[in-house]
Length: 384
Image: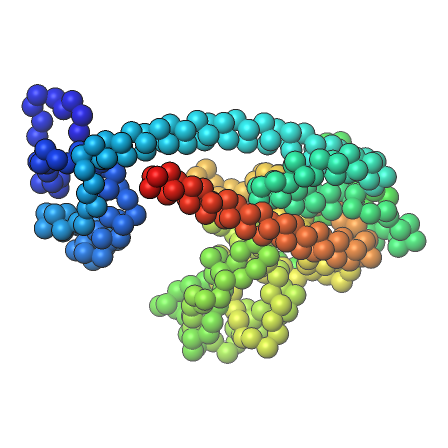
């Protein structure tokens, strides 16, 4: 500690060391903050909770310290200070570059979602593609591109429409066209598309209420909120609850069921693809079963696009803890294309997401290589 006040009291959780003249305090501080020292303390710490571990005075004094001559200790401290200032400067430069990169990426990807037709999108895409080597140079840029793909999908801009497929109006009730015409703020949809309420095109219900005192039957596996992630399920921690034989048909999942989180991260969803695996669902989840001609995969794309843009939040209730209640889910409004176009959109989005995943993995591997190189350079500089 440099320049301590004249009177300073230490708590019993702090160990004060008085160093010999041949030891530089700043050098010892570097050693004490090294990864080797952290490993030493973790291995010998006492206590049962990870947040309340303790190291004794004996453990601190037993820390192995590589001790060069005092002059070399001073040179090492000076060298580390120089490198830390360089790191701070590089970090600030990188932060400014990241902000500029994010603004440029947002502007160029915005030209894609502002396209009025697939033809205009193709022209704008060509202009953006000329800068892909500069734009898509980090994983978060690929995330932004993937979000743009979802938005383009629900606007009908990923490909030309087929007028011979008829209208999505046939999948809805007779008043849907009037609702759309009365909503002047709604984006213009391609011919054959319609605005739909989810309650018009699917049956939705919440799962089984957890009540140990009232639930009867034998234990059955069920999904809860944390098991449902975007586009996937985490099944390494599936719990069980009692279900009576009379409830099995009502709450058992079928392949193709869309599961939507009611709370936690409201709207997060994934499609259950298992028929052979017995699984049920708890009240924290909505189960959605689309009507004929409507794909669960397309509804999932619409939900994720609106969740990423923030548009989905207007359906949530609660000031601090948000919920996507059943009535709001039924009123969830989204652009619905004819059945054939839904199939093409789902296939195209899946293809583009695979490409994004591949690019993201390559960028992450490249960043890992750069990180290892930086560590090697620092080690060489310190040892030199």
